Image (cartoon, rainbow, N blue to C red):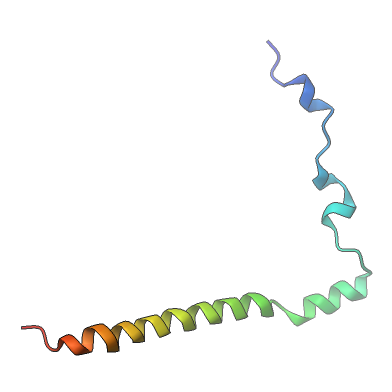
Length: 71
């Protein structure tokens, strides 16, 4: 019994094609993009933290505070 499928051997993944995965630009453009840093990821993280904090504050003031002290 063979250890590989004969139909798979002739398949070439799209990831091996440079036009499918690579940035189409020169070295200077790549360096300019990298110099800006991950601003988008930081923005998404900051918005997520802000949303969670806003939800927590809303729960605190609209659910916990009106119930009063426990005991």
